[in-house]
Length: 581
Image (spheres, rainbow, N blue to C red):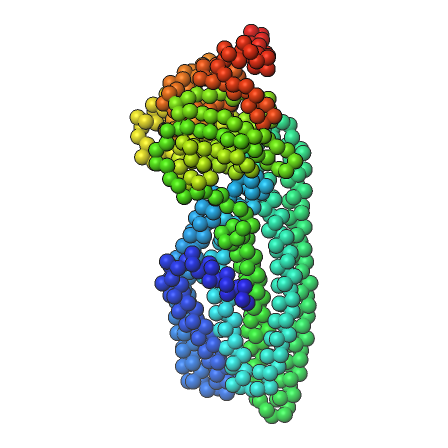
C-alpha cells in the first residue's frame, strides 16, 4: 500500500497541471459511489413492494431508481469519463516527454548495453498504464467496489446473520485474489522483460532489414526472434495458468458459498426470522457481493500491481541511478576559437583492452588535420571522447584551453559536429532533417548547404524535392547520399569544429572529389579533424597524424610522411595500386 501511495504521488506531479479535471473526475466517482450504495437498498425495497403487491409504492420507487440510474449514466459519460481523458492523456504526455528527455541524458555506455526495446516499452506502454491507473482504472474499480458494497450494507440493514455470512465470504475470496495477484505480478515482471527483448529485435528487424537480406541471415535472425517470441509467450502462458488455477479455486468456492447461502436462508425462513420476499432480496445480492465485488477487487489488485511495476520501470530512468546520466560542467563558452588538445589521454571501453594510451596531440584553430591508422587503432574513439559521448579515464581533453569536463553540454556539442561513416537520418522530410539543427532555417541556406554537399541536384529529381520523406534511417537514400545529407546538416549547424569520420568512404571517386572541394572550402574557417582510409581525402591537410596502438607515432604533412615514414608510404602506395587497377 505504501509503495502504491508513493507512486501515485510521483505520477501526480506529472499531471498536476490537469488537477481540475482530476477533481472533476473524483467528484463524479464520489457521486457514482453514493448512487451505487443507494440503488441496492432501493432495489431491496422494490422487491418487497413487488412481493407484497404494493403497486403504487413499487411504481414510485421504480421511477426513482430509473431517474437515479439515468443521471448516473449521464454523469459517467459527460463528467467522469471526459475529465478522465483530459487528465490521463495530459499526464501520459508529460511522462513521455520527461522520459524522452531523460533517455537522451543516459550515458552512451548504458545505451549500448541495452536494447532499444527497453526504452520503447517504457515510453509507450508503461506510461499509459501509470496515467490510466490514477485517472480512471484505479478510481473506477474503487467506485464499483464501493458501489457494490451498497449491497452488503443493504444486507446489514435487512438481516445481520446474512450480512456476517456475506462478510466472511468476501474476506475468504479476497484472500485468494491477493494470493493470485502476487504470483501473477512476479510473472508479469518477467513477461515485460521478455517483451522488451522482442520489441528490441523487432525494431532491429525493421531498421536493419536491408542488411539482414544482403547478409543472407534471414533464417538465423528469425531463429533469434522466434526464440524470444516463444519465451515471451511462455511467460504469458504462465500468467494465464496462474489465472486459470485461481479462477477454478475461486469459482468453486463461490459455488460452495452460494449453496451455503441457500441453506442459511432456508433456516432463517423456517425460523420465521425473514419472509420469503426478504430471502429473495437477500439472495439477489449474491451476484453483486460474490461476483461483482470480487471481480472488481481482483481487477484493482491486478491494476495496482501492474501500476507499481510500470512505476518502478519508468522511475528507474527518471529518479534513480539504474541508468547513469551524462554529466557536464557549468562553464559556458558562447564563441570558441576551435583549438583542441588531447593531453595524456588514456581510455578503454572495458578494463581489458586499452584503446588510447597516453595520447597527446593538438588541433589549432582553423587547422585541418588528418588521422590515419589501422582499424581498431582508436581513431573513432578520439571523436567520441571529444564529443563527450564517453569520459576519459585519465588525462585531459581541452577546447580553447578549457577542460571539457568543466564545460556545459551546449559548449561542447553546440560547437562540435561529427559526420560519421554511417550517419543516422531521421524518418522525416529532407527539409525537417536539416531544420533539426536550425529551426529558423531559410530555403536559401538549405539549398546552399545541399549544393556544397553535392546533394541539391539529386533532391530536385525527387517527386517532392526537399519535402520528400526519407524513411527510417534514410532508407530511400544510398550510403553516399546519407553522408552528403549529413554534411549539409553540419554545414547548416556551422559549428567551429567539424569531425569527419570516414565521411567519404561510401562515395564514388567523382563525388568524393566534389566533397573534397567542399571540405577544402571550409579550410581556415573551421577546425577540421578527418579520419580517413582513403589517403586522397587528407593529402591536403595541414598535418597528418599516424595512430598506432593508441598513440601518435608520427605526424607531418603528406610529403613529409611520404618521405620519412614507411607505414604511411606503404598505405599510400597500396591505395595508388588499387586506383590504378
